[in-house]
Length: 395
Image (cartoon, rainbow, N blue to C red; front, side):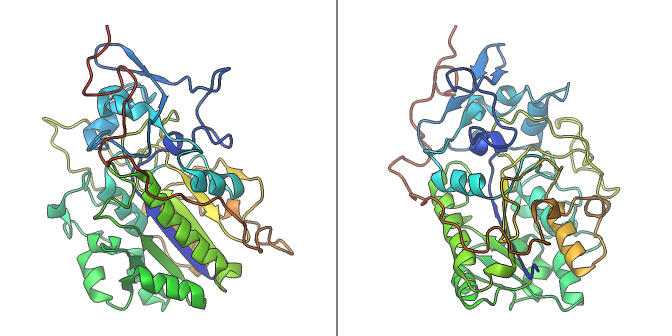
């Protein structure tokens, strides 16, 4: 029986960018030499091909994950062919097992979801709001000025849990994501706490029914550009190992995923989605790309880590961040917050809850996470011709 649901949501990478060369799931198409064949045209009609990032560091502020960039990437024909035009040529970069050994080990061992989409074609705050409230209430960007604005009409999952006496905690390195909803943050001081508390609770087997675990959002630990992605990978490795080695492991389900794609290329176009409510996106028709909340965002990496996880399983079921809400609602018989989570999948396809002996009851040994490298944040190293925004475009 699952008693503890743990979610660790990192920042700004697509399925193809991290797991495209994994060899499981619907990843990048490879040529006979094992090189990805994906290309995207720049604004001059020149092709930029998928390329391996020269290091685990990323460019500063590129690629872009803004509303306009995301919709240009999706393209007028809905074929994901506009990434270079919308997000810059570095969008075609990807990381592999040599860069992210722990993530590839995790994704090779436990079920992955190759149809987990961000909840909308927008930035961090809107997508994280979907995780906690099933809607962004119109918000499309990451702006401090919008924190606390346009509160969700039906509240958040935390208020639902409180109303039914179900425990939850947001464990944060520095900035808890419940801060997007100031009344929740300020009104639940005992439920918003530190990572030291997380590791202590995991070791004692006292994790709550629902736990959000947040990385270092301030000092480049979330994997957002311009960070060294191995810093965030090491954080997740510590979280996963703490859960697997704690006495609560036999009754735990951990979900590893990302808020949105960060502007990096993915080859699977996001399908239509059920709009969460009647609120339209806060866009300026004079300068913003048209769009609504009736389409998912780009695919993101996701894995289900639990003793009940199905061996050798890849979920092709369409999931988004509201699938976490649906899981919680299914587990505790709670009503939905919006139309989106009411109709979401609940992630249980990745588990075998009827197994006489769960496949991963004994903690699995996963590859080590090397941690920070020698690359300079904001400077990944030399990019291929045509992929470096600071280099001349080849003729």
